[in-house]
Length: 267
Image (cartoon, rainbow, N blue to C red; front, side, top):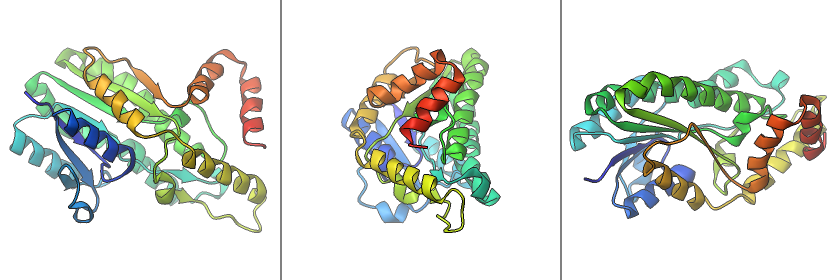
């Protein structure tokens, strides 16, 4: 029996790539977008869902279950980038980022758990970020929202084990997608004391995305995880040095690691 997969934020980038890869492997795939009418040429159905609006989450989840009778894999991929000096980032944008990157996935998980409990099976994959393992300069809010989702997954896994529902984190590094286009950027203010370091860091971040890995690497990793009987708690997918940076944080003294990051960002 083909597994039924629901992917949030699947109209472009990593989510779209995962969906297209999985249908080639005979999965039944549903994706979501806030504006599904823009993607009528998608290779798999795109349903309306805004992770900040719980009624749209429940409606879409129920639609998939009514059509297929089950829901085997949920991939919490929808997310939003945010950059800027924390001091100059509007509170409304900080809350908006957490609504998308943290509370949104929680509400998706809550919506699918009753069906997975009834099936006595299911897999939930939370797409986080390597940035969630460290507080990055001018990406502190993004690091915090993704790091919070990483920790949430650790707790959720233990709560769900008795129902045979599995959950894991997949933390990507930089991939060549259009994520930068949808990212909130705190404006570069001429009067800001952060003008030069923030501007330089912003350019460096965009360069990293432009030179990022092919998102097919993520799709292949997700496919392997789905076919793993007992997924790990955390997976890191990206260039060697991006993954190695997490190892360094674990073994180096805090101030030494901080100096390495500051040197990398030329701060």
